[in-house]
Length: 580
Image 1 (cartoon, rainbow, N blue to C red):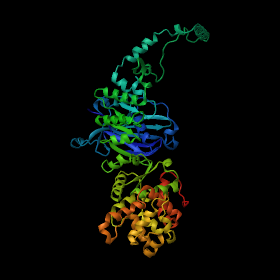
Image 2 (tube, rainbow, N blue to C red):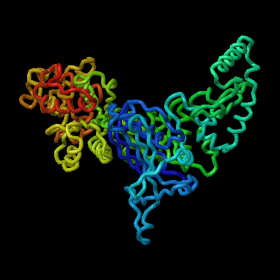
Image 3 (cartoon, rainbow, N blue to C red):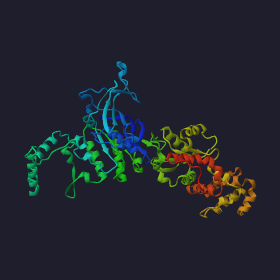
């Protein structure tokens, strides 16, 4: 089945998008990202370009920054099937050739002409509150992109609001209108309605007022013999009042009055029944009105179909069901890039919010997640209010791989990781060049080494104290085991035994390091880390103690640039310090 397909979409100065250039996939495109980053605007731009009607009103907010003088432009390179009628217009539209990246002017050489698929460049411009629909010709000229051609291309649009009934009514160009394809219906209905004696239905006082108006027309030499009849108007079609109804408990009710989920599924089924059609489909917030099982079913249906589909969602169920779809992420700077299905599979399944936040910080592990969360809460406040999400990268290697996959798509995420000397220095350096201050890595060592190492010696006993009073004794026990003090696990004894190595011993216990002479008891010593900070709450505890026990002044030069980079990413001004 031949179907229209957008190979390249370019948006300039439309609503919240200053500039976007995108090569979508041919099947289902699932667009992810936080709120207010431009996902819906992308769908609305496609909808405006292929609109089956001529929109007459533009708002100043349709122009980026309300700069009406600069105008806006939405352009797409599109392949069109013969059924679109593109080659049967009164004025011929010449195709371009697609080279896999851009539309090229066709060569006059026969051997070169077959080098690419035939495509067309379609554009809509907004200028001075008017819309100009154009087909850009290879010779540099422009022809009109007519309403009839846009209707024949076909568009199914399921918006994120409650007005998803257009394709359930006989509006010109709607899926139902294309399905029934009864071109004489409007004329027959108009003719029949025109014969209706509306005047006979008036009450007597109303009839007398109409007669008085007729006499006034006569006195003013205006057309007389007034009557009432069904009349149309500019842009009005009587069939727009006709829509599908369905039985509900013996009563025929308009499908437009049913739930949002039912309306959406019905519109898609209508589109499917158009033999030979596979219209470009736009689904904003696919989860709206649909239970999880229906979300999964709808995504599966769309993936099996031949149509090019554009979907936005905040639903983990829809993301999990998109097994063969192309996943795209719109970051906080409005850039769109691909998500590698293989490298993001674990996080899509376990933590889909990673791809639904405005800004995600991928932390190396659970301790780093807790620490970075507490740190950024001091710098920003409630992170959820700013659309910031902390994701557990699951270890050094997987964190690096995930951040590389995201950066490869040109996207801007944050990272919080240890600096394990000798592990992939080139890869980390390349990643740092892309993410700049949004990627935090210690100058050397890991989180525990840096925080504990920065504490004043006289505050080390306080570090041992568990705020919940559950693990203080266990932490002392881990130190006693390492120092060989037997049953004596008081801090004074431990301090005296450790001497100058107290900090190093505490760091080793917190990391679960195995002493060289204790290899036979490896599991016992590795388990020590669980009594310290190896969980999200432990990371939070470590951050709070960094401030309360006096380590912050020493660590501020390293951590403050990261805090300000995150603030800048969500539109907040730079600050000089964090309050303890």
